[in-house]
Image: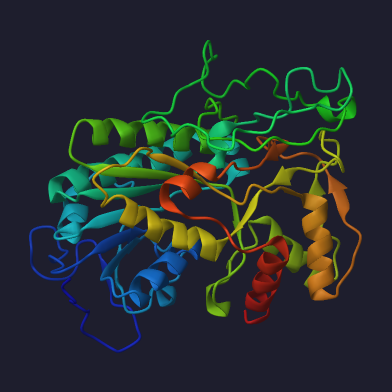
Length: 408
């Protein structure tokens, strides 16, 4: 492996904007000896992946528009500031990828509520950016791609269609050895137009009359039925990436994240109060009650249930996926990344109160558009195929997040 490093001030990233730098045609010089390109590598999740890659000796180039990312989080990786959604950016990206062994594509807009308000912009940013990236991957002949997908592609697979009309649902556990994930994700048979809730999806008032249910872990074979534009862009992104891989020599792994939280290092904590745990910290430290968006879901305590995975477990999953793509036989291309255990919003708030020592009863607000009642991963495909599993618990997640929050 070549070990090209960036000249400049030790410990400080070199930031180049597209249109600047060495005098090649596109303004970004060829990066000799690069191993891995990480888009969105200055963000919360990306910075953890970049640091792990650097620690194991990989050479890393980060592509990020720095809209939400921070340059100082990228260490001594080379940082190129670029807008992936710019229609003219593909040739420049290809030059930045020259010599790369792999791309990890994280850069995307990810707020569910915002996607409901701005669907066109989300498709332009997430799908347009992915299309430009895939074009660059082809131009640079990069052999491996790890695509950041999301559990939002599943929509609201729980509860079953008859939830609330009988006694509490008795759901069959997923098979201990689920079949490999299909090469191409599929829509449910007879599905309606994109964005139409799948059969069994609760209506707006479902929680007011439904019987609580225990969410069933979701395998990768679950039909895709996203219920918000963000999830739709991720599902369509998987289809596009699979089509490109099927028509070329590109080796692809799509990782469907569940709810990512925690911090691997105190300086890499989630910087924005846009996800549940930092939102709770922000409210508690200001002496204000945390907010529960909806307590009338058909769940045991009425609040949404999610599978919270520690960001370090998720970051390690990307390194394992890169190594998996070097194997001659790869039985699956789509992988859930989660713990297999769900926690409700109210449970997370209670854990945050325990860790911080600040207990303020939450206030209840209306449901947010596009939030399914429950999403819990069945991660067994990744465990069986790659040997990966999550090791950290909800207390680990909240404690590490709080340590990072205190250093802000």
